[in-house]
Image 1 (tube, rainbow, N blue to C red):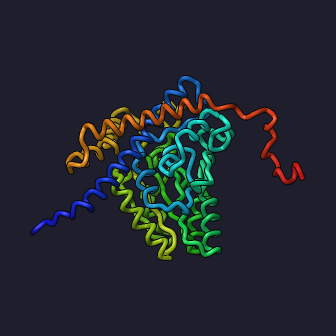
Image 2 (tube, rainbow, N blue to C red):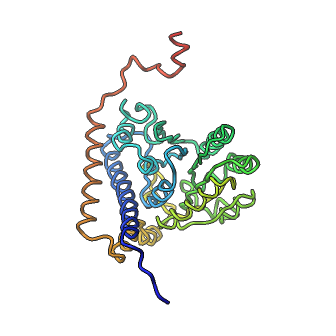
Image 3 (tube, rainbow, N blue to C red):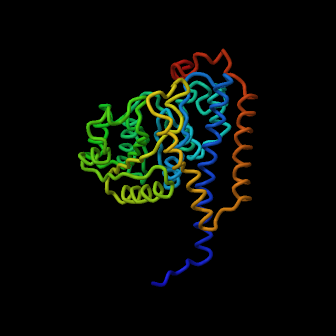
Length: 335
């Protein structure tokens, strides 16, 4: 069989997209690693849930969405926000609790929000984003807008009533929702086999009669391919779709979590499938990545993160005079 080599421009476009995916994952990884350090230094307070290990999911899904689509995320959302296009400066300032943050410093790590990129949370309550996504999608459908709402949630949310209610309504009303279940195997410290009688979550979702399939969430190309297929079908009027993105978090549930519910061997085994390392190797094998290119990506990511830290440290706190602002609407308060 003769293998045809794509024309040079097409191959260059493919290479550009591949480098962009690698860049996105590295930005997320370096940002999260720095946040972990800043938490230890007590610069970031409250709860902190790191996305390290799951970078392929946010990167692959976001690459398939348009600017007018909506994104609803969980409390482990820093990676989603970065991949969606929210600036590292604004995200880091929010982590510090500064007024220049995405939520004026009032939400912190778990409540990132940005209307400019249609990024609607950051939801700290497990499963809370699901009915919110249904509302956004219903509004788009009633207004006749060609939009998709991507809703991220962990496998722990599958045990919540909102999951079942939301999937049921999405199918009944044929809403343009992409359900993105990031199955990292542990709902906080509970292994999925101890939580779910049916651990094939794509199969469980399919019971609501929406197209559902599992995806290797450690492979950014697999995530991108599955998402593109699902988004195209949703835009074509084929109703909601469900992706079970099988992934793994390398860090414990949160910075407070000692992680005693899983073995070091298990974590080490999953780390051999690091989405960044395996993708870098794939690009090298294709001749699309060399040491200099990778070093440049690394340097740019680290410089961006350090710039964000400087921005956050130099940003002001919200003034005390604004303490009650947004508690009631400004029209009522000043009307």
